[in-house]
Image (cartoon, rainbow, N blue to C red; front, side):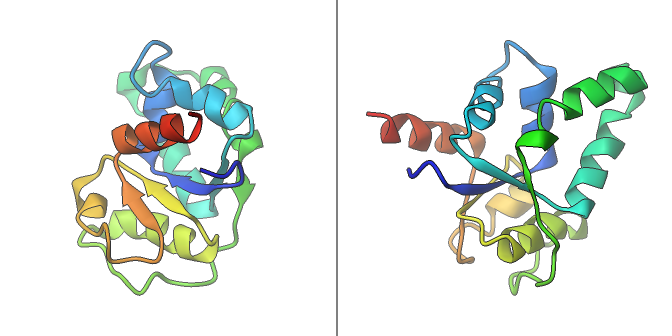
Length: 142
């Protein structure tokens, strides 16, 4: 996989990477810090991330949320969403990730969301689960 891959990570993927330092997606933090990938973000997807980080179940105060965002957003390319994905997701809350992928000329959309994964093979970009993305990255390093 080329080092310039443009990737949309959905909210749950980013949250898992940021919140669980020993979790299965913790490796993503080093992945985007090393600029091995260009994560794409739009106003809508950043707003969604901010909203979810504020859930009471995470018990994060404002400073905690800012610190976590500071470990992701500076590594992202902000994309102005100008195009809609011709493929529509059954869950309208997931559509901003598809539209971002189209507008940002993404190579991949990484998600564990079943509604997005159901669209794999129907778009001009790859849609895959984080586990498959991890295998893709590891195989490109060999």
